[in-house]
Image 1 (cartoon, one colour):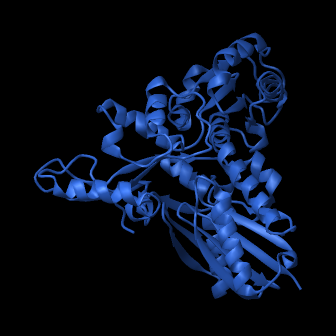
Image 2 (tube, one colour):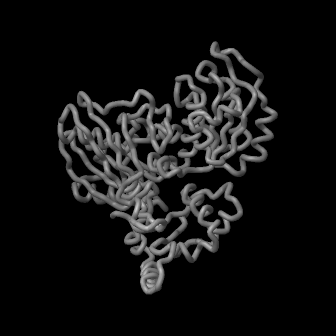
Image 3 (spheres, one colour):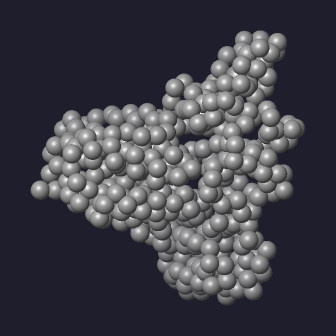
Length: 429
């Protein structure tokens, strides 16, 4: 008999389920996702599901992890600061397929080198320019993406660039040819940039999940759900986290098929951050042949054909303050519900809300709070961003008490995009 443990880490909740012999659900459990330490939420959900089922951790034969964290990060524009080394292309190619937009001001080096369509060297690799670039930029990024012209025909220059980066910096490197065997260099470069941006986040999730499962006495191998619904090893997911985009929704599709047995269905998965809609055809998730599209980016990752919008239960409610009609809009940024942050910092939240309710006019930041996410890398921060992060410290604050000028609002959003700060506000939930 087999006992399967499934864990899904979403933006708001972490769910766990135990299934016996792939036919019978023994127990389910839910816990809040803890961004500051994902192992806390994973551990609570797993402990609860084991307790409800009344089984020993040693009985678990396989553990599978699905997550929406990568999808959410792309939708919300979050992730680490990265650098792109673009080998053999023209500067103008950075504007193709949204590559410059995806970099969002992160550094890029257009480097001489690359190959032709037959795999022959088009130009010598300019290693001197690469080493000079590393001296100025390596201290300010958490990952590198490398994309070379016709690297799928000959990856030699990508591999040499990766070797030099690893040798001189020790920072994780993503090579585009390792993510896709197809042509279209700018699109491969975009996929590599997004992968490099996600590496730190997914590595922390998998590492902490594996550690927590081991502490609970679960020795079973842990697998990770890919965006097409198949399983990959934890080691593969750490190196290619981009393949986990749409992992959570893909698991929902597989689950819907397993629960209902239907051959053809339209499935809508509404979470805290996104709403995802996809198809089951002939009993299987429909795959997007053009590659997964998330957060406005078309990648070269094989995944389910899905439409993802930044609208969920924890989407931020924005007041419309211009014009005569007023009203509200939702999303696409996910925030912590005020009710949730009030559980961890009740004195701060209640005092601020009481003061705001008594005020004669509505403040721009009423109902909003900020707190730092501990344990995150703050490498490469601008001076203004670093000062705001230091001002926030380890406490929860009303947003208006942190921002001292209008220009600091943009700096705060940069910290949110980097995953260094969380904003709490009014949400549909």
